[in-house]
Length: 122
Image (cartoon, rainbow, N blue to C red):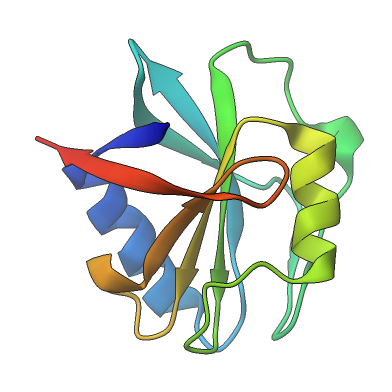
């Protein structure tokens, strides 16, 4: 299994991670024809140094949302216990962007925390 993401979106997500640093940021990934193309930043979220909080009632019903993304301000892309709990609630694919926020520091996971490959497409 692998996840496909548009290079322009990945570059944008990495830039967001740098701008939010030292806090985390989070969003939901929209997929079109098997490729992640867009991000919906969590509405009215609290973006802290070690966690993100938001009201799930504010999320739109959107069938194109197939994954999540969030940043880790530390140089570890390994999901925490809180991340794994979050993954189990939202399904799909989950990207973690860790410091220093470059393509090598991005990892993708399934809902049960298994790492999967990322294919970057133009």
